[in-house]
Length: 393
Image (cartoon, rainbow, N blue to C red; front, side):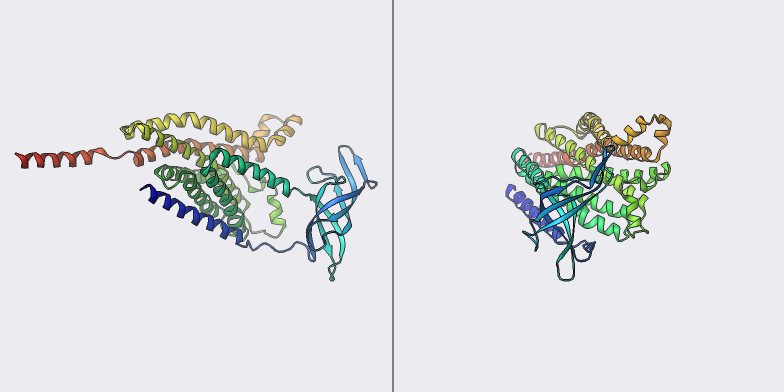
């Protein structure tokens, strides 16, 4: 039996890895170049010229000229003078120093000769890969085989959103239906990877998917009820100006609320399912009623910390917005009635409601899946015993 389970899990991991590979190779349909006859390249800053750059308050204006050596692509080893335009916005501006790595855009003529070099930004890919590698290493060291499965689920989640949900949403498909499809698939795949093909994973899947569907419905209803428009999301209006006027930003906002909450719901469902699985293993004679009661007690403790975690995560992303309101002396009533804060309140509390619901739902499912029904088996055993006694007599 153990061999069969391992074989089943190995097949599942193989299929899952193949699915991730398919998603990696899947074209998004939006790979066209922004600029004609231009390509990006990694470069090293050899020398800088800051004479045309000046300070205005806390920001810099003007331009910075940088002599760079190209480190990738067909122009490797060549040197060019790059232009770094400063707009006076700290959010977008960057200043280079000698020795730093940069990502540059090389504009070429019809004969592939570089005619202009634009300093796009600092080169961060290697540093990002280092951070990801540290995360993967610590995960494998402390979690072992489960850590490898977690990395696969992490990769699948990113690829599913980047290669499926975003391109199809840009093509005009319903963002809510896409979010439900992708979110539910992520829950099923992630929980099967983390929990294996076990009742523990099945119970968490039923509990999390059921709670997330309710969360999606609440996101739709309260978005209409709060009169919140999807333009509250950062960069959302830029989509309209980029030629996607038919996109419904409000539906995209509703899909985003659902997706952002589904991760916390998934986490809580597997926590409760795993805890109740351990209880059943240590006390096989526990009744379904007792098991559900234990799940509710565990849920009370975990939900409190999880909802606080959700609140802190959302408030952290809007910390500067709230600081601006306070610095300007904006009355609390004006803050709470603003579209931005109302959207954040909706985001936070819809997610918290989903967390509150997943605890009892997962506990009920565990009570149904984990506990065998003894009445029928005892009745059958009693019938067999009576027959045997009659025959012996």
